[in-house]
Image 1: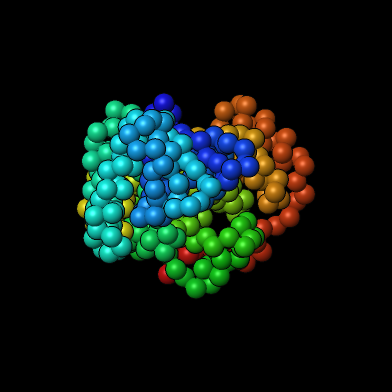
Image 2: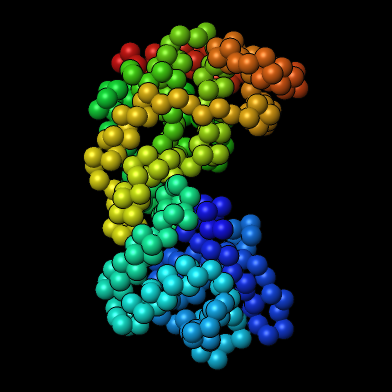
Length: 334
């Protein structure tokens, strides 16, 4: 049953107190904690591993409590998960509350459990789990390193000051309030790509080869939708492999070789197909006409119909002034 989940987790039954209703939940082993989430993956509570007590040693299903003299309980029926939890708890209790040693033992226990239960985990489960707990600062740092690796292949992004101001204005117009960075690359990239940390990469062709900014705007809306729907950090971890994901969990970092290899693949990677209605909704929400974008990408007939119908609802409103668009077209000429 574990194989249908996309995290290192199992099913469980949780009860907040003696009078509360029993609830089906998911249980995941985290960094010194057990994380309990509902069926919608909303966190209910976190239990500190050193404080957890088993109420029925030797009996299954296992019943755990987050400490002594507490009415809250967790019931786990899955034998493999019980064995994994017990192994981690033994390691925790041997080491007491020494953070560095505790961390090592916890992940050693998790590693052993993963090896023993490998046939049950879906491909990419560890990558998804690692991605879900890595802090934003780490995402931003790794995203910046990926950007540097990509620029070694494409050349430094174009940064002519007047054009940069126009690009920033367009970015704010399309994604108000979002902390997104748009970089125009001078070579190699064919259209668009996205990176961890909120960076959208754009080929110079999208500003140089078209008469209207609407084409660039359409590609940006589409790429940001891919970023939202498919976590770029999870994509990186899946590409790098389980060893890289496990290394990130234990060290908080990734190797330069893994990042360089991922950068090389991103430059030539095919872009994920988008749901036409979801994309149409982005055009409607931002009041961007999709007509020029449709001409540039020549999508399937069904997509053309959906986006054209959306375009009929959108008022005509210039995204940039003529002088701003002309400046932006020259961003790589400095």
